[in-house]
Length: 324
Image (cartoon, rainbow, N blue to C red; front, side):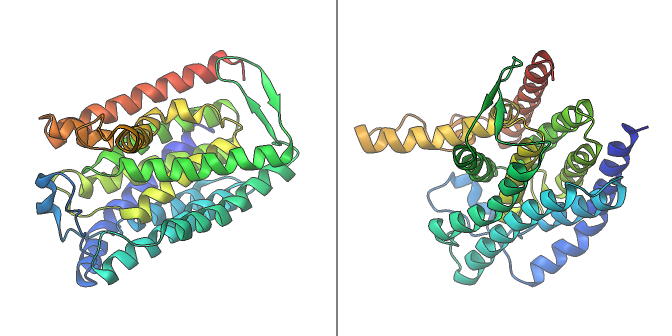
């Protein structure tokens, strides 16, 4: 039965992440990949300095292996793995430079953006040249399809890929938050892929959720390891690629509503300060606002993860009511 394959994939990925966790953390510690904590962040985060980063490899390797082992076909899988691992490589380089320089800044923003665009272009060209996909968008909650020109779709798709990748990166600021929210979103996408009959992508999304669950064992507060940009950029890119390959591009802002809120909180904070000299939040991204408001880190993570679950359910409803 097709629905069993995603369960196998999630289980394999979770077990691999749990098995790879301890030796990977020891190796990252020996390599001196300790996190450099921003001085302008919450004061309570200063104690996290030195926690091994680059732990995203504990998600990417198990997810890729599990999907490759369980997937019944390999038509789309190579492309989505290319996007995930390509974005992960950009993040790995960013993390490496942070460690090498002993600062909280790695790649220059333009270099990071260029890397993301180059990787994303491969995925977009696959969509544009695949007769089963193409340059149309479906409006959530409806059966309406909007046909776009190739160039317009290319620009929108790049925005989705880069935007989602960086939005997940912004969300990765508390122990367990990014991994927990990605698990919820990936499970919702597993259901959508099964409804579409795209078992190959369902297996991948399930592997992603399983790997994140396994990683959460080591990333829950107090974290033994951080995923770093290696993980967050890759996970955001992977979700966006799934949206492109399932033609649910406009559903992603609903399914990943938490990442949208986190990104908007940063944009709103910056614009408000530049235009009025005042901040609209205690601190951005949004999770820090609630931290400084008195919520314990674990409470913020729990409530934000539940919010991600609710967005996932809403996205599923948008998909079902659309008659796909």
